[in-house]
Image (cartoon, rainbow, N blue to C red):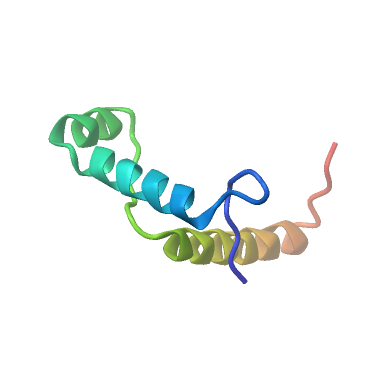
Length: 73
């Protein structure tokens, strides 16, 4: 299952352009250094890579939440 954080019906061409620009920014040494200073780990990749990451994290943390019987509120 692929999930993306985007507006509904965003054209594929726009997604590609945004992805390219984001990956270029994440490759910039100054951006990398600033993100490292903030404790962040940049993850460049494709929209499909991002969708896979979100699905994996949702599954992983869903198990933790269910195991801990964690409820909102």
